[in-house]
Picture 1 (tube, protein in one colour):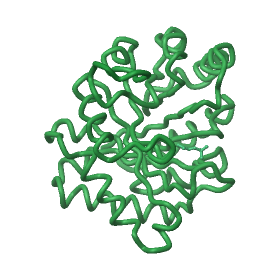
Picture 2 (cartoon, protein in one colour):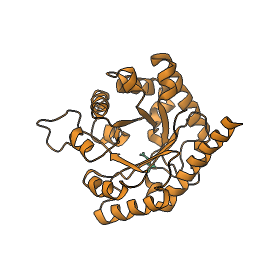
Picture 3 (cartoon, protein in one colour):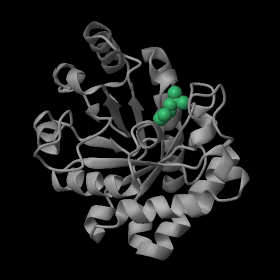
Picture 4 (cartoon, helix red, strand yellow):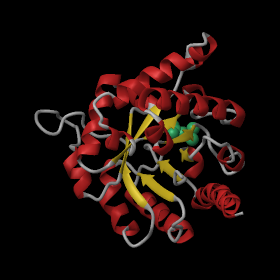
Length: 264
Ligand code: PGA
């Protein structure tokens, strides 16, 4: 059984130390005790040590929104994976649409970052997703499969199983509404089948596929209910601790339902 997971990236929405520390503290007070699902927060790089300090005695993990594609060397402005590991990072977000589009990150770089993160014992959260144009041209599946094949390119089976795929349709990021839960389920089920045909049952059963793109406290429950949605990845609507708590509760609620069903 895949453990449910909810995570949030603060992007640069949180852009002061004080604000970041206060938010982490409040989130910890609200959901820091939760053990049945995994929870993570990805602040901007310089906030990581302060957030680590706050969260270290809770069940909430932390990580980074990016990592260098090479281990070390002449890469001005990049952050090496080793330092992130030393700061206690457990999750590394890789290939977000903003990184791919604004910073021209390629599938090849994504693949290198995935491998490096795993080499340093961190879990890559690999973002994949199609644009509106690709969706309209019925190219979504080709795009998503290509992104998966690249991301998994250099990995052995045990490494592959640790990867988290975050399906984030580009047209649903930063909107009022998330993608419809039925649509997301259909895509996630395609992703699961792709994993199965490429890598076999064991990998496809283990790899968690989460959804991101305008997740909020209203749509979280319906999204989490879908069979192939293993968790949620939250942006703007997780910037208030009370909202993040509601989203976490939605994922927890569904998880507990599964447990009841299995016990019966
Ligand atoms: P959003 O961001 O929830 O603000 O749409 C989600 C994301 O980009 O992961």
